[in-house]
Length: 221
Image 1 (cartoon, rainbow, N blue to C red):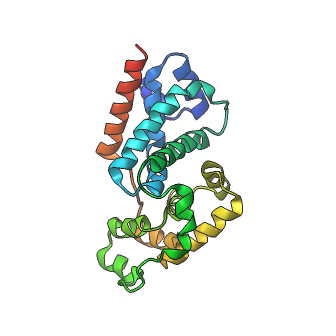
Image 2: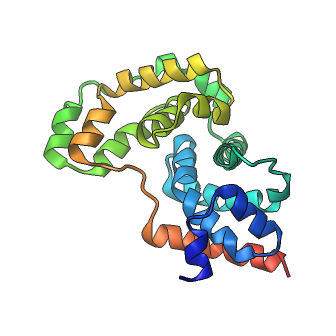
């Protein structure tokens, strides 16, 4: 077993200790461990895949630069998820799109197309992840982020509230409203169809990992 193999099963805080002690390569384990979660958070705010990937890459680099500030030993997942969320929101505010708070004001005015083919039928007919992801991408930002983290990432409401800086009940209500908008029970569909949405593996994971490691190794010289 190589050193990297043994590190893949190492707890977050121990990994951080290795990295801060000079084992930069150990950060690759962190990147691969949290790529999918961070991508899903980014997708909750930006529907565009390329933008979401840029956010993940920037968040990994920022997390590495701030690693010494992590208090630990627990809570690293929330810590790195919050960094991802903050970077995504910063980009949103800089863009010409509605701000996170401004969009919240028009949530009640936004309706999904109810005249479209019934969602259950569409999924049954096409059986594609793309169909469901498209529908979720159509949700307003605050609903989409919560829906992805709760229904797809299976994150606890308390953790979502902490990452998004929202009250527990706000998360709960918005998740319920998101399901109502989509007119589906996502849990049932994901179980029945065995779908895993917004996956971040293969080449995409490898590319982000390679890019981030190149940057932090350059910085460490």
